[in-house]
Amino acid sequence: MTTALLHTADSLRTRARAGRRAVVMTMGALHDGHASLIRAARRIAGPEGEVVVTVFVNPLQFGAGEDLDRYPRTLDADIKIAEQAGADVVFAPGVDEVYPGGEPQVRVSAGPMGTVLEGATRPGHFDGMLTVVAKLLHLTRPDVALFGQKDAQQLALIRRMTRDLNFDVEIVGVPTVREDDGLALSSRNRYLSPDERRTALCLSRALFAGRDRHAAQEALRARAASAPATLARADALNAIGESRAAADAHAVAQSAAPSTPGGPAAVVAAARQVLDEATCLSPPLELDYVALVDPADFTEVRPGHTGDAVLAVAAKVGSTRLIDNLPLTFGAAV
Image (cartoon, rainbow, N blue to C red):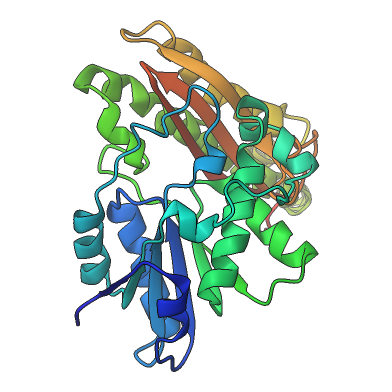
């Protein structure tokens, strides 16, 4: 299969179409993470459907002093990766095609969710992102659009926009792809020197530390849930004279008591400890934020939170800013 390269919406609109159209939106510089999105799109579209990969470096989502000019543009290589992953079309419009009248006067506002975490660090970024996603959804007219979970706040905002503004499209999140050492794949990784990369690994290590603390807490919670039965067993063993076994059962029940401190704060503390230590490395890690948030609105979760959460981190290493996150679930059914 040869992947078609198209530059105009008219050429995409007049293309013969059968089955479902699945779209993967990118800014180019494709890597294995993008390839996983394209492969997922291929599975969803099926052999009769169509997979379209957009390549467009959106100027609206770059703030003052950010890396628009040095953002890598590798269209020939992108086409090869897209083709190998199963794309039918690479849609690479120019700026004039996406914004024919210049920068749009009317834009999509990200609202309150667009002002926290990434939005606080990069004012206006999410307005620009949502505006181009809305335009590309109109230009490509997909049945389903796929986005990576690595950009968790972006994914949450796109889901909110399509729901609030009645876009007739299914939004699918695809899990983060990591390199063997744990670093989340990103087009910006290519900017890291070997020493900077070693420091950058602390982002994923911090998340894994938080995940491990969370897993330990959930295991303790599960033990606490079984404590009444364990205490009943201890009483029964006492009744038949098995005092040593009864003492062991009672100890298990006591150690599983739900009064053990922990919760969301302990998860964040475990991650922050790794990040704090990384500020002493050479080169140092410059932490922007680490937070445990509700994926519905990206507000920080409260003590006693149950349900889904996202442990998110952002930091700068050298001149490169990186983000990463892990989904967690608190209070899952025992």
